[in-house]
Image 1 (cartoon, rainbow over the protein chains, first blue to last red):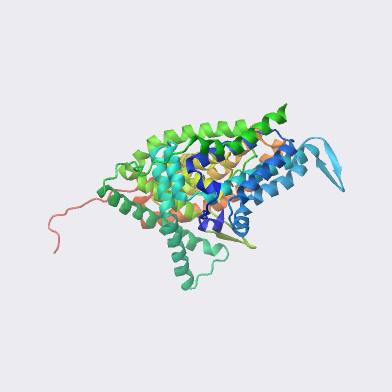
Image 2: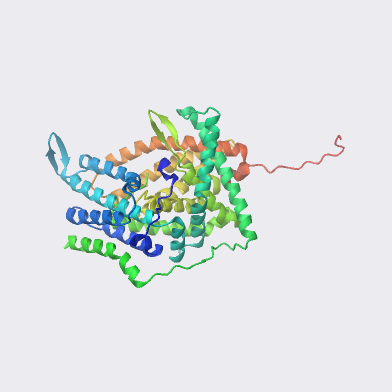
Length: 252
Length: 229
């Protein structure tokens, strides 16, 4: 997390993934990742192929690799955990140069690394090809609870408003000589967070009144309902089908 | 703090998703009671606030910094049911729009960060508030206690889930020791930030702090006869 969240991931384009309806893509992503996770540990060839598949999907979006690389940083904790596993896992030990590692741990490390990478690659592929407003429409189409849809739509609509407010507060602090170093900065930053809560809450009240006066009934209207052709469903479920096949084949 | 794909096996991921969905359904029904009819837009902006507040980095020293997780803070500010709804959306947005936290682990992350965090935080907060003197000044202290407990318990719940469906057999006592010690420290940071934010709010706008309502005195209108002009 941290400051990397300031910009949405979405990048315009015309690739196949860009053109798929968002609800279809979301179901495709969820089923693919779940199928990948169900591949038994140690089937490294299958997992390697699935990582390659996810990487191919990501590259097929045609988004500049420089933009993608910045987004893949979130995979770092997975790599760190995978590197640590051989040393902390229990199981039969084997010598690895001067070190003793658990061979179960080594297998598990590769498995975790492959599954984690596949997850990050495919989630980034979804995020760069889906505008945030489409995610709202997709969840609405998939019959997510009305309150969740409304909260999500607010998140998408007001995220940049509130983060820009946060940035203005930072400029105001720093123009008054604030240097964010050490524990002494904490009361100042916490007061700013508190002020941000008051401002967000009051904005919520104003927006609510404005919405009520325009006839809001607690449910967002579906202005242009999403539709999908069977062919699009079939396309979106191809990666999941391949992963499921790999998962079943590895168990035989 | 987010669980990535592949840390937990598929059955555990699905089971946590089912539990998380059940908890979310209960909270959706109850959220209306906490924020009356303004619930939808307000909950939306509270979710945005939690997301933005997580972006404020608090310097720790030696080039490292930490940030708020906000489960207990949100529960104290708007009530645990609304907090669960808000944090669920925050976790979902982080997974689906920022690829932070596994998509297959969405249920696990919602369970840990949006259900266990706010509810443990709120339960400990309410307990501490009952024990402490009934004054507004007790609210930040109780909130800090809740925040600390929410982080430690969420870490231990993760260890429990890992013991059931973890990717590799790690000795459980070592995992408990490592996760426990580390999150005792993280919990202290969370408690400090929560304390400071809640103190600010109790001083400035106590009417907006859901958890401070029982200790606030209603302003009383006193009419005295023969008041001086």
